[in-house]
Picture 1 (tube, rainbow, N blue to C red):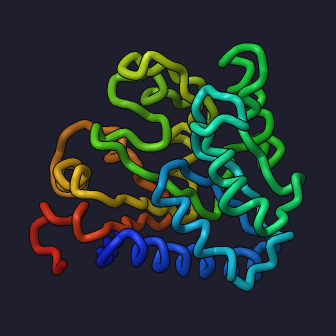
Picture 2 (picture 1 turned 90 degrees about the horizontal axis):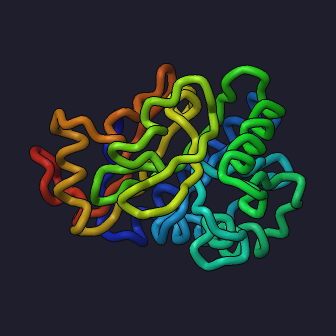
Length: 237
């Protein structure tokens, strides 16, 4: 695990964007394309805005989503809408390069099955993303893998509908099976309200969803701001 502590959220976004571009360029050179699963939240939006001036071959970048809320794609809570406004539309990304959860389908199971089939087109086995972006909640959840929910024990599917009792709603999420198969995983975490949980996940031994993100043969990097890293021992802030 690599730990990168930044001064402020803006600095975090800039440094994470630089790593995003580095991985993307390397992937395009080595495999002809770059596949990335995006995250929701305010910190990734800052990163997306930093990418607008990047000299990437965007036609070779293929965007997926690590999770999604059970809302329509034009609603403010949608992870897709946030990425579409901050990244896809400004860069004029082709629709063929964007793979969102089709939350307009009839049932949560339909949405999950549809995304499972989308991932199977990427790879008939477990897809190996070049990069997966993740955040973390103050309860230790990541993507839409929440404490005490069924998706934590999902081992046969890559995409699943996850009922979250503490929210009283459905979420859609990639499973650990595909997350831990990624070549690179970047956690983006900012804010003092996350400090206690960051310490617990990185230095503790509690059974928390974010602690189960352990790429089998990939690279795991945590990008933190000073506030979220403030409880960590032996960290130069």
